[in-house]
Image (cartoon, rainbow, N blue to C red):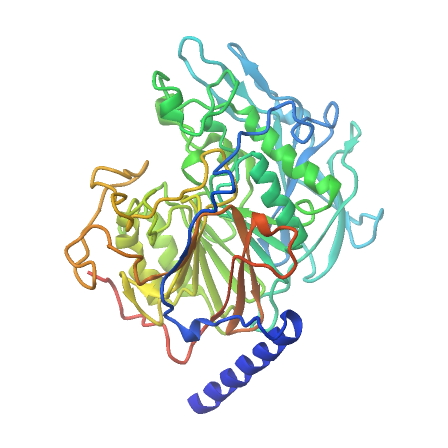
Length: 550
């Protein structure tokens, strides 16, 4: 049996090579992970480019509200199950000031009308509506209360089918214009989403708009957002100009303030892009929280905006919180983990993760992909070994169940690893990829921990949640050291540029990963990084007897 599998993989590799030659020319050959591990490579920051840009102002045409009264805006989709979808939107005006009065969410209905033919909606579903507050009992700070945020779950959907829908309150009447989406295929080893976009640390700058323009051109059928969305916490509550370094610009702030209208601008930016060239109202966007979503208030309140604004399938996947969940997209099982809630092996997230992994049937969903905000493997100075504690708690479990790919953000640059486990090259380890290069106000990261004088001290990179587990390497070329003297062997390729990635799963063993640099937006067949990620199930059978790496 193994002999035939190996022959099939050789034939598949040959076919992919011939297709690549026909499409991209004889000089372009896309490597595969079967050829790895690769010699580490670095493409340094292009000094002709700017490291960052300011946020778009709130009066920018793309951020302005363009509906009136209680008509829906900021419409978005999220996967609930293979036969169900979440539809979310906002109505009414948010308020900001010293004294704010929350809306009554029961005053505006939450309805979605949908069907398979344009203008003919045979099904109607009702949902829930919420408001949230961001309150600061400090002198001179302003409070915020949101518009009404609606979430409706529509079900009974057929896979691979186009649906038309309107959302709003029909009794007013205040319904949206017609939108449309196409459902993803059912879980199966033979069917996959056409193209999955992956992006992180997006923000609201001119670089952000370039990233989104580029992403739209790539026509994804699903978007994975690996945290740090609006960067509303780069502002004081009074608004004004955001800062690339909050603590530098506002050293006397009594709390990490936020300007919550930036969230509404971020939602409108997405909605306007859909209006100009339909994307997000047609394409589900799956999010996970990052550190910029913490947004602390008094009395220990955190993540108010994230928890209210985004519908995710946490209940559908057996989780008890929006902070971690899972879902299927064709033959891919996605696991979205929370880096800013308890991740210890004795905690509820770990217990949920173990149960979720145990239930995955790899004959139905061969691909297992995980995502969370803060990377475990990272050779940049920024956030170096910041989430080492999380890695030590969870890595063995993911390796045990044969996770294929891991996506993270947080570091504002791009990096793809060789297959690795416990800092050791391992053909059965996941391919870790950092895509925190969406374009936010904090600028692109350019320093590497292995550059002379750039190795962080043990007191640097303290996480905003969890403990500190910085360590010196116990083996290999960096034995006894906190940083390598050269690019680590587990780092295959890194570059300091803004961009996003796309994953195209071709079959049960091959997937094409492409990183698209923003500066290549208008260049044909130009990619910052591209590789076929190849699963080897006959070599890497999950070892369910492994319990820990320590």
